[in-house]
Structures are given as structure tokens and as C-alpha cells.
Image 1 (spheres, helix red, strand yellow):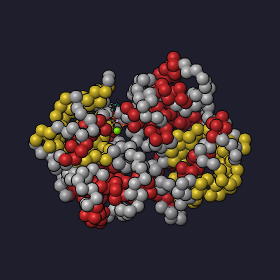
Image 2 (image 1 turned 90 degrees about the vertical axis):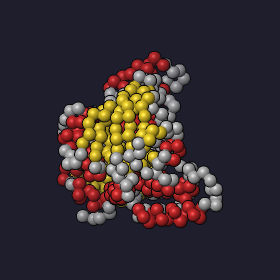
Image 3 (image 1 turned 90 degrees about the horizontal axis):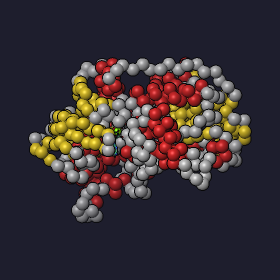
Image 4 (image 1 turned 30 degrees about the vertical axis):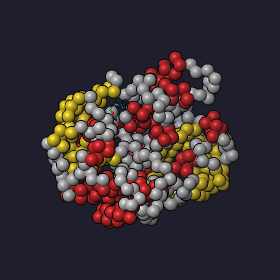
Length: 488
Ligand SMILES: Nc1ncnc2c1ncn2[C@@H]1O[C@H](COP(=O)(O)OP(=O)(O)OP(=O)(O)O)[C@@H](O)[C@H]1O
Ligand SMILES: [Mg+2]
């Protein structure tokens, strides 16, 4: 289906998120949409899929002007979208989720639906159990299910908003194969990302947004430098990691065991020094989260011992961990990190709650929020609600909320969903903390990031730390093989 967007405008208060965008996408194309955090990518895609209404401008599908009032309405016109932040699911079975959005004769259609589900899964080589539960699916599998569901509901245009954040390398290969197949079947795919290598490898055409406007388009062969220049209006230099001297042990684990919902991490012996950065590599759910939450006091120590800054906290409460100078930053920003509906300044109040339990000084909170916004270059105001911030700006706000002078900082995917510039920026801030003597543990799926910023890398596999590497001596290929469970 051919799509034409004409002079699309959308404002949120003072923010001109889409400022007169004109864009056409031909049938059978995979179009990449690139742009820095806050450029207006998600907004434009939500307009095209009926979640938002444009303030002005029009949408033409196969040459006919349409008004897409709701997402269901957009689907009836053949436009379906997968979302940037995976939704939270009630305890629901896979097949029931697949059936969402079908209006008529829900129960009678169940057996027919199951056959359709099986056919779609085998066509795209998705291994999904219709009787399994949603919460057992990985992010990649939920994505496959959602693609199958949208196709079943008649999508001829598939919009994916940062689909490769949070999925494994294997699942990415599979996803790309699926998208290529869809394009070959004459479907139109729009792929939003700020990962240049993904876009370069997949898309037949690229459109670049900056500050709400379409600033350029490109076709293969792409040059990374050219795309970066379009995205940011300038070339970027990746920061070099300054050598920081290691200090006293900040974290000491001996024979530690942390149990999670699905996996138990056993027998961890690990010492992390002040000023050391330790990267955690591995497939999602291999035990990294247990370690990160465990050292921050959010998962109880089952066996063994745990010391922070030389103090034994093996049996300590979360409050005691906080008081000892630990912090945890979750990957799921709106699920665990922030509270939807609250503003940046309200988060400041919550983050400082320990110090002033009874009286809230809003003037102080506003000043702190303003300082955080300035320091972290957040596109938002103290009174902006956090879910209205773009993904990258939410992440910056989370960092702004961290207390100063930490002994230990544990982070899941600190740069997930961030554009190249923001990621470099966030790391410049983290490296400043490291220079001040904070020990940093972080998990990421980005192998380059692991090797660039870590002193040591721990490779997790099925609840065990399989290998410990010095980042300076390791290669991406070596890490990739270890993550897949292959020994050196
Ligand atoms: N619901 C909303 N309420 C208020 N402001 C919003 C809302 N949605 C988006 N914005 C603002 O519009 C601008 C564009 O946001 P958008 O989410 O489209 O950016 P993006 O390009 O998808 O960024 P990212 O790469 O970080 O996901 C941002 O400044 C954002 O704060
Ligand atoms: Mg977005």
C-alpha cells in the first residue's frame, strides 16, 4: 500500500513534535526512519497508526484521503503498529492475545483462529506455543506474536518503533528475515530506529527527522558518516575512556546466590573496586538481572555473603542498601523506574523523600528539577509528565534522579533506546561518577558498548557466570560466541 503524509503538524504544548512533515512510502518498501531522541519519530508513526490525531495535515492511502480515528480504524485501513515500549500483559494465553482485536463471534472462531495462527507461525518460522502464557515469552517472541496478530487482522503496512531494543542478536536476524519477506509480499514496512547498522542492513530507503522536520532522505549505499551528519547536523566523535585508577573494593560477593522468578544465579564470587566498570553480557534472562538487583538490595541474598564498601549487608533491608550508597536503574523506565502521571519535579520529590519525609518544599523540587533538566539536557520542563518525554529523555531524567556520591551503581541497559549522541553523553556522565570512585555494574545487549566502557566483562549463561574477560583483550566475536554458550 502506498502511503502519503502531507504537511503533518502536531504540537504538545510548546513542543512542535511534527512540524510540517511530507513523506511518501511506496508499496513493497522497507523505509527506515532515523532521528535523534525527541526528533518526532514516534509521534509521526502514532499519527499514521491512529493513536494520535494530527493538528493539521493529511494522510493518503493508495491515493485516497483517510481519517484514522483510532488504532482499530487504522487497522481497518490496513495500517498496524508495534510499539516502542512493550505493553504489560495480564496472565493471558498466547492464543487469546492473538485473538485480541477480533470483534465477532470470539469463541466460535477459536478453532479457525488456531489454524490461522499455526499457518502464520509456520510461514514466518515463529516458534510460539498458542497455549503458553504471555509472561513466558521473551520480548522478541512477543514481537513475533504481535506481527502475526497484525497480519491476521489485515495489516498491509507494518510500523515497528525501535523493534531491536531488547531482543537478542538471533531474534534480530529472524525479525529482519520476516520483514524482508513481508516486503517481498508487497507489504510496506516502516522501521523506526536510531541504530544505524540496523537501518543500513535492512532498509531500501531512509528518511531522517530532526526537531520535528524531515531533514533528508537517503538510499543505499549508505555512508554512516552521512547518516550521522543528517541526524545530528554534525559529525560525532566517540569519547575515549580515560584510565581511572581502581580503589578499594566497593562490592564483595562470596558464594552468593540470588533467586529470581525464572532463574537462580548461583555461587558468585566477585569483587568490584571503586572506579571499576563491570559489564554483564548474556542473553536476556541469564541471571544478569538477579545480580544487578541483588547487589542493590532488591533481591534477597539466598546464600553466601555480600559487602558494600566493606560493610556486611548480607541480611540488610533495601533501605540499608540505599543508605550504604547503592542505586539500581531499571531498564523498564515506566514499569520500574518512573511513575506515569507524575512530573519531573514530582519525581525529584520522591527521589529525595528519605531526607524530608513530612514537608514537601516545591520550590526546592522545582529548582532541583530545573538543574537536572539543564545538566542532562532533557527536552522537557519541571512540570512535564514523564510519559510525555521521548524515550531518550526519560532515560536522561532517570539519571538526573540518581543520588550523588554513590558507592555502587547497578544499571540495566543504561543506553537502551538512546540515539548515538545521547548514549555518548550518558556515558560521559557515568564515567564522571566512575572517576569519583563509584563502582559501576551494567548489563547491555550491545557488545560494542560492553567492550568500550567496561574494565571487565562477565558473561552469563543460564544462571551462571561462564567467563570473566578483560575488556581490553576481548573481541566482539569472542563475546558473541560465549553469550551463545560456546566455550572458547
Ligand atoms: N504524549 C505527549 N505529551 C507531551 N509531549 C509529547 C508527547 N509525546 C511526545 N511528546 C514530545 O514530542 C517530542 C517528540 O517525541 P517523540 O516521542 O515523537 O520522539 P522520538 O523521535 O520518538 O524520540 P525517541 O528516539 O527518544 O523515542 C518530544 O519532545 C516529546 O517530549
Ligand atoms: Mg520514539
